Amino acid sequence: MEHHIAGHALGWRRGNLSFGAKDGNPLFRSFNRLSSGFVMDCVATFFDKDGIAYEVVRVGEGLFHVCHQGNTIGHVYCHIFNECAVIADIRVSDCVKQGRCVLLQILGFKPRIKSYRNKGVGTALLKFALNYLKAQGCTRVEGNIMERDLKAWPRLPQWYRDHGFQVPESGFGKIWKVLV
Image (cartoon, rainbow, N blue to C red; front, side):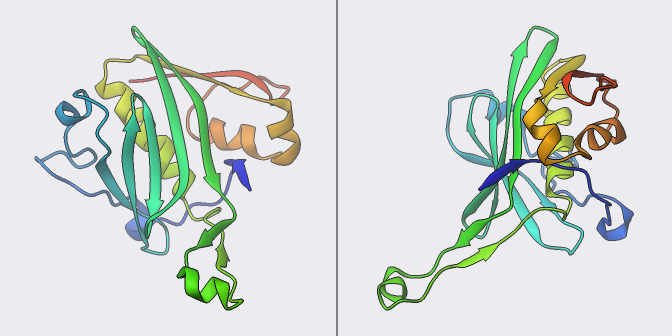
């Protein structure tokens, strides 16, 4: 079952995100590669607060999956309209089946279920998306918190506020942030 990201206390290794680097850029490997075609390509690597590595993979125009050990555990989907962008969806799964071989499943062994929530993965994915949008020339990003998301995760508006978004007092509706 996938859910929208809720707020959580951060505990990053060395107090900050650790991202994979290439071409001298500390966050992104190369946006030149991103603009050509829809080839799945690992564009960044980051570590959660426990030091576990995750890869961000581009799977389409503005669509990125975050993967761990071959499993897709979350995604972010961005639309760009001139200098304004919309984050249409950002999710981190809280129940991912860890694959086991088919033979073991036939013999009755069940795959392990693992949660990736409250580890800083959503925050890293949001920071990745914001930096990606800045690199694409966007100066503003918008999104929406749906009422059902607020009911499921009451801390979600505060999570967005903690990341610099303007959030309605009601906690749901249109949210936005100026990218500097």
